[in-house]
Image 1 (tube, rainbow, N blue to C red):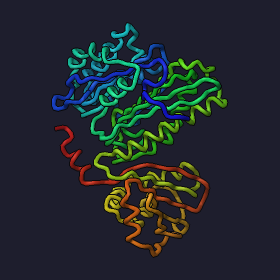
Image 2: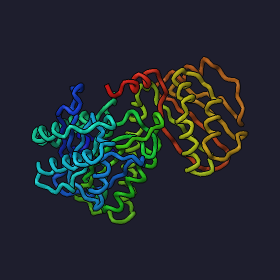
Image 3: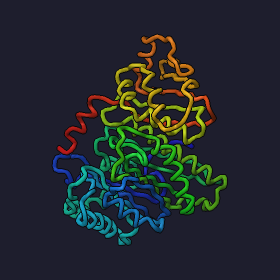
Image 4: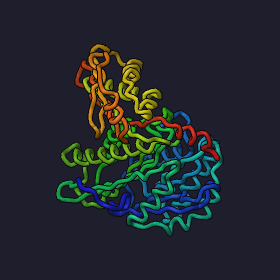
Length: 407
């Protein structure tokens, strides 16, 4: 697997672009994006599990029922959620406007939105700008970057990647972009994510690979315990790489699935690092649990703890909060078997063994916790289950950002 440039435009057959159309009057950044494939793609997606779903989610679920897509149109600045029939009509209009640019069927267009909930989408702004959006498309890094900027809201860091692998004798590329900084908690983590690939792969296997990749990446990220109304992770496969179509779980499928998983984990970690107001990326590494599911639940409980997150912000090795969070995870275990360590580039210190505190240097622990990336290592002592979960610290700025989000 090697790094390549181009993002979602790196795979063959894709163009992307983004413009400012004025969805949110106070914003001067791009707010409307489009990703387009020259050919009809095999497609798969996973969506929010929130019972309250945005109009874009409801429409895209319908359009993806046949696992085929040509394009996805995305707006930021307005979630178009809890907006009733008018919101559904606006989402449909977005698909129709994008489809008209290429004389394709609106059902081959997915729609995504992100922003403030409960405000009607100013569809006229999109309608007035759709031609400019079409003209903004390109098949290179500039098109990718314009689209990436257009999907961002409170994100501070850009989150994207593109790689190349070999399937048989053919080079195959995967490109991706995600946005997500707040309202992030499984299942799935609050985000918009768009992945392109020129691999030839059946719809069933593409769907299986995406769901596995999401399960071990975006569904293992938490920032603040809130799952949004608009979550969407979507992949389109053009087949333009010319590889033998992947139709069974053979060596090529395993290579593709592994690469997709690596891409998603990389971007999930970047999303946690860019949590609203965050100063630290936290990796909760649980091993020795009964099984993988138990390890994931234990790790997520620690990563979700406001007290643990606050302690990490304060550079306080308060291991009791970690053990406490393990205890209310719902997973049965013997506390007397638990060991806890904290680590970073500055070293590692063991703070708890067999469920009890150890003598350690508070000064050394503070140096470890002063780093931007912290790993909390937990050994449960009752099995072989392992899982890694990512989160961030809880800072004063998180409250500032969310205290005036609508302004």
